[in-house]
Image 1 (cartoon, rainbow, N blue to C red):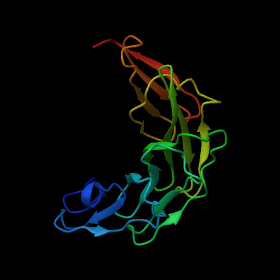
Image 2: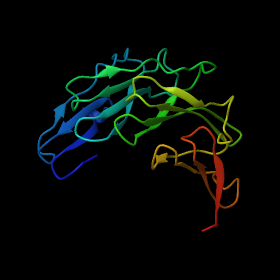
Image 3: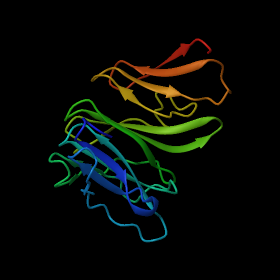
Image 4: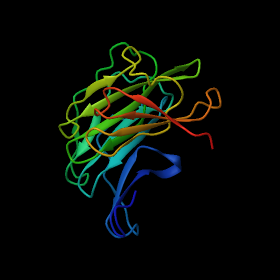
Length: 202
């Protein structure tokens, strides 16, 4: 994820690793490992990082287990100095979730306001998910949507997330042909409630 022709971030590592957070300041010629102090795996389950990189200083990273199993504690790592130091968030509230928890998207619109999308189960063409919001740089997260307060967005797989401001956001929807047309979910209140946008069939 290059910010300009010199500065950028990456997620990766040797031999297919997906845990290291890397920084470059010379157009990718050299990279510095600035991985947050996430607890290492025990050798039986590998971790996979999902990150969002706002600028050269601000970044957020979450580690999901590669098998999708919910971790004992879910925290988001945040840096304000380009990865030289990281702070752990308060644990995400995961009440009612004891099996799957895999974060696919994190997005911040500025250094304070951001969202996190986690997939917590599937079934009958449903992609059960949780949506969290932070308004304090990722130090704490409010759970907006979950399978129990579903916001009408649990049907079909959500392959992405995009907020263009504090209130407006979109979730693309892939129903794998079960439902006709092309769909989007749209919010105008920062992710608390959503409506379905029906697009013409391509």
